[in-house]
Length: 94
Image (cartoon, rainbow, N blue to C red; front, side, top):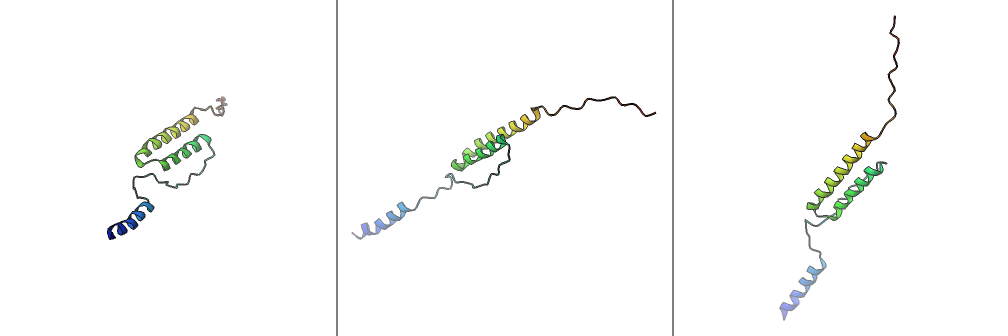
């Protein structure tokens, strides 16, 4: 009879305390400051997805964000800029 009384409090404590799992997802709470570039800001926000994934899922998100940032930089190179001034012949000094 004393066994059942001593077991009850231990079970109640075990049920009330969540079990610690070091591999469980945990938010990193890293601040993400907007850059003003919509494409880059969208990629930075994508990093928040890692807060809900186990660490083995982070690589996929990081690679996706890296790809998106690389594409955004490549797009900057592809955009036409202002026209380059044409070469005007200048008179050679005499």
